[in-house]
Length: 498
Ligand code: NAD
Image (cartoon, rainbow, N blue to C red; front, side, top):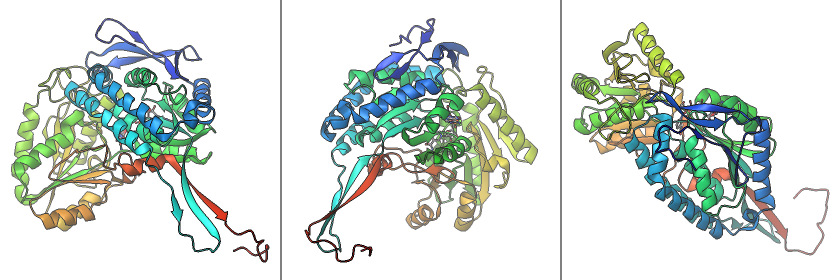
């Protein structure tokens, strides 16, 4: 599609509906800005209800009349494997596009894109292993079984920090289940999803199975959530938007999966391997410029090692290389969007106003217009806003604790429950902490490990449902219970329920 190697060319994208790239029905496009160069590099179609109608109709047709509807699960799997192969062949090109859109480090995006095919391979393998089962039913003269059916047309709404990984997390299990999808990527990072659409066509995915309507959340996004023929919404984004979508989706009784924000505790005990723990704390908060849902934004450190950990972290924050995300030795790139940039700086002011002590960073960086210095606050109390609310930026809050009990209490004392890290050499403590922390993922002596085979999702206000792993496919299935009487006799008294 687009030749993004040429920096001077402005790439104009179109929606992908029913196997074709098409202009937006309203005839409007909006800009996509490269946050590092601070320049417009692409034009994105501004979708509305009419585009969504067309995409949903195509997706519905694909599930009822098209070849997808009658295709065996094994054949579906073959196409999905081919999608994985094509992403692998195009990983570098797609990673460059994502860096242009979100400013994250090229090394990270390339790593994600090279890993991305595994979701397609894993769920391709799962497609023909979705089994119902015979139930050894307690009623005499009956044969009973369950069957799993695709839930229907899926609306997939994604965030800007890892655009194509979210497409894989949602669409690979959805297609394995036999669904069709309409994706609405973030308005800040739509390009790679539209490029990916071309690969689905090249892989031989039938028309209408995978559709992309780009646009704004309140327009194209809301039209998908409202659409009566969309059966399921799978969403990654902020908790505020997620809760609004959950309410809106209830009107048409949609199934909903939500991957939302976090305020994850990364907990260092005094018996930890401190070199590993400090590296884990840095990666927890400063990777991706802090713009990850799993950021370990609250660093809980046992008081006896707090000074040492703090000093070493400050040194690492001060010496981090801030700059061009394309360069392999850059540690911290720009913030993806101007509103996000302003939000991070506002939170730094809030923390100062609350009495948290600033010990590193604390403002814009001179590396460019959208850069924030890696920032560390200490003397943070867990009831401060800086400890309770998601910043989504390179801002770390250090909180001291005395013992395990206090670490658990502080760790769990937020509305979120997405992830937690624990650093200890004590195996008993590791297990006790893993059990006590209310988080969808607990990492012990590691942070950020993610796999296509490991369920991922949040407890509490961090969301609903799980992505990745075998159970992800269930998010896209309905269970049907079938009863067959094996008796020819009429029931004794038909007015009595049996
Ligand atoms: P966002 O909520 O602003 O937007 C997410 C998506 O929803 C976008 O595509 C947007 O256009 C769309 N949208 C917005 N309003 C809508 C509406 N009313 N109806 C339908 N769609 C609408 O989130 P964001 O700023 O793009 O992403 C950052 C957030 O995502 C952070 O809170 C972060 O924690 C969260 N996140 C969660 C995970 C996870 O897996 N749990 C992963 C990454 C990011």
